[in-house]
Amino acid sequence: MRYRPDRDVHFDSGTLKVYAQYRFLDLRILDSPARILSPFISAGCGFAYIARRDHRPYTLGTTRKNEIDAVYTAALGIDFFATDSLIIRVQGSWLAIQQDPKLLNAFSANIGLMWGF
View 1 (cartoon, rainbow, N blue to C red):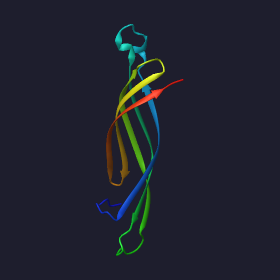
View 2 (tube, one colour):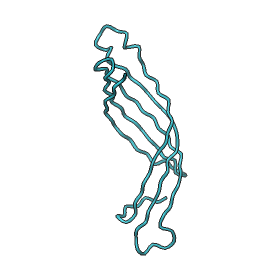
View 3 (cartoon, rainbow, N blue to C red):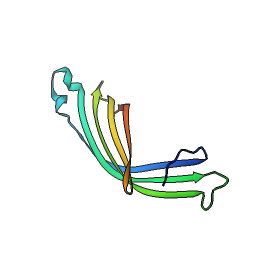
View 4 (cartoon, rainbow, N blue to C red):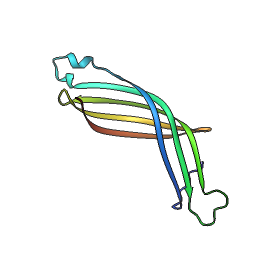
């Protein structure tokens, strides 16, 4: 699909992905302040559903177009254990949607709060 800026053309998308994550937990057994850190990496793949709605009055042909594309993802981050069950996660990630012949790339930085029980 072509993604030209136009206020009458709307794109909606959703992704479903499966990934594996490796957390380095060896720092948790230390007696030093480094025990609150747990770095991790993850990688995976899945698919994206993209829908285009064209609301221009002069459009010829179909006003809707849908596609399903492959998605690739990778992330790198670190977990900070505030307590044994309260974790602060800082993460940088990459997501790519395969649209032949090139990739549509997205990069993000995230911070989150997790609670384990």
